[in-house]
Image 1 (cartoon, helix red, strand yellow):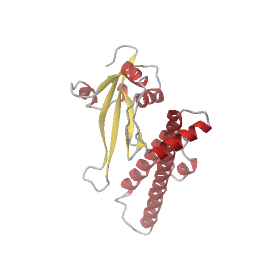
Image 2 (spheres, rainbow, N blue to C red; image 1 turned 60 degrees about the vertical axis):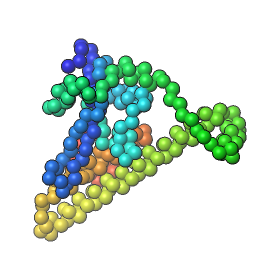
Image 3 (tube, helix red, strand yellow; image 1 turned 90 degrees about the horizontal axis):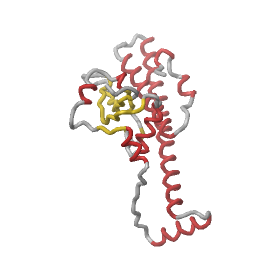
Length: 219
């Protein structure tokens, strides 16, 4: 599709359909096309550039939760046709780079007592008020992301325990009709956990993977 030496990428939302829904599985929708990306750029570089340009994709506050980017060679049926829609959001990679260089500004209206406290704290470290607030917000965001990682890890362990209870019930003569649903729930939870880890820039805990049956791992 793209000119020689370039690739188009799609930002895809993976919408998980609940097990009790008539359509079980994952529905994928394209929310953004990034055009004319140099073909030698790696997945993470393209993803980081999208973020740096000011785009946020994610679920439940988790950056990239249930989202992925897909190069045009891996697009499923229908995406190539969707790419031609005039009302579909597209942005070129060059435009992303330009947007990533634009400094974003906000205006904060602070009560005098808070402003004075922040100004005093900044003076103790020879920092500007802007630098101090930026660091505070950065630390807050990192703490929030780590909390999300912890919640998703608990979710994975919960789904695994539910699966083990199900297997035990089968061994006692229980029905097997929910086996696929349990496996999907584990892998969906684990994929969300990995996305949260990437967003927080930390490595997934290998102990979490240990408890997932080898046949179910999607790495």
